[in-house]
Length: 185
Image: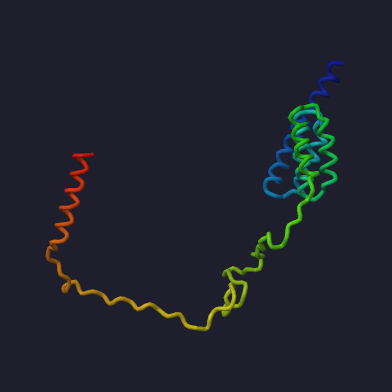
């Protein structure tokens, strides 16, 4: 009798470990945006775990999100409704929040509200998607650009390097102002 129960416990422990591994794999795939494969891993994990446990509730919560991400909304809603009966209070609350979101009406977006994102797959290695003679941003003007004239280099032997009295007057005035502020500040 005792060995049969021990075998059941060992079998349950193996299933639990495998469920955690499948769940972790599903999470990684979900976070990378590979939702279809994450659904497969979450479903395997759920088959191994008891749906009434904390792990089972967490797996099902993520499975609802994955179903929604792969446009399986009806399955997501059905699973979410089942989760509202889960024994864990936090899992039930999370299921109610998700169900509220899943059942919310879809908003229609007008075209002027959307930004078009160009397909970057058409760009070659050199960053061009059009012939080299054409600009990617539209037609270029045919007028040649005027270049600014380059300043002529200065001959330092012609520069006046004698002391400039204005510099000394300005330096003295600044010193007096700072000194006055320090004394009366």
